[in-house]
Length: 271
Image (tube, rainbow, N blue to C red):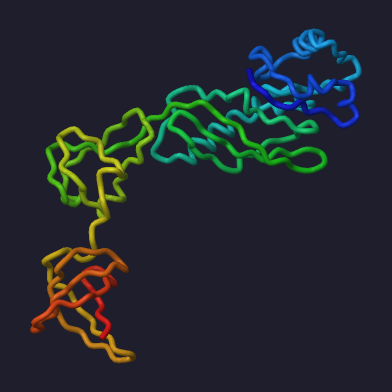
């Protein structure tokens, strides 16, 4: 049972008693239903529907409106969905969730896709712009979908902290379960956060960014004091990425200093 409020034109609300306006709708009236079904249900409440202007009924509540037909736009919507999801293939025939079909106050003349997103790995949300004689309406519809995705698979066991571009990898296509998978363009940016076994599919939960400065490596050290800046060398005592503070032992200095990572192999010490 779903509780919601009946939505009618202001001139029609007086035809319905308060107990009907705030009723519990049975499952049989959820989704798109026919006028005849509503008439039969209304009779059980002692309500007449003869003077109502029939347009359409939506969801688990009644809304007198024009349901937007997406049939003519199906090919365009499918194409937009596919182009908005590079690297993914839709495995099933796209089916709109009827509960999300837009319902507007006048007949639609055209439908345009504004944006496509995947709130879950088994669904697609399509933002629509619906053209009518008097203007445009913004709306959204949900499509049921199953995806396959391009993935990178380990061909051999890999150790923690190994840069991804040093791994033995192969391309495979797998059913997508919602993980954010690593793409080939990202191999230069990340290293493994843990040891992984042969056959593993790489995702973002398995990696961390490769530090611009690694512990134990020689780095360029810039020493800044106002407008004065000099450069020397030093050894990084810890790892870090851009903007992070690390410890560095400046060449010929007996102590370590705090430095900020500014670029690959470059840190800055303010004095």
